[in-house]
Image (tube, rainbow, N blue to C red):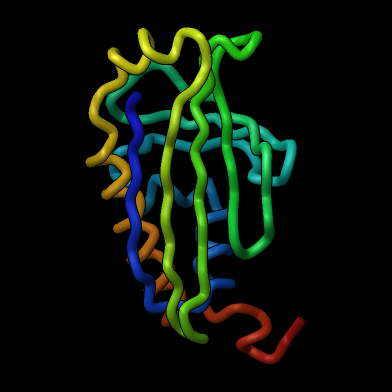
Amino acid sequence: MRHFAARTEIAAPAARVWDTLLDVAAWPSWDPGLDRVEGTLDEGGRVTIHVTESSRPFRLLVTEREPGSSLVLRGGLPLGLFSGTRRYRLEARAPDRTSFSMEESYSGLLAPAITRSIPDLQPSFDAFTSGLRRAAETRSKDRPLDHERGTA
């Protein structure tokens, strides 16, 4: 069964990386594989991702959200026939260093057949993690968080 994953170390606090990850409207500014992203990453929220390589949007449900550390998105077919699950994880390594990883796995009765038609997503995973790293590190220098400015 197919599985994709990517990891990076980011020279920014975990709170900054989390804020950057949650800003879905900005994803296309740092991930060239995305045209636009709509929706919210609140638990139970829905996002629609429009990628440059497909005319078909991907509609995903936020099934888990642990503020500052993990986010899980799921999409697929009714009745659990096919499901794709994408997990984002953050781990603070130091006050100004965060480990970020993402992975996607598939399940369901139709998963063996459907995953054969899924293209290699590794380049897009690598682009997402690199883009998030650049965006969070730049944001760290240019736009401090409210708590870093001493305001609420």
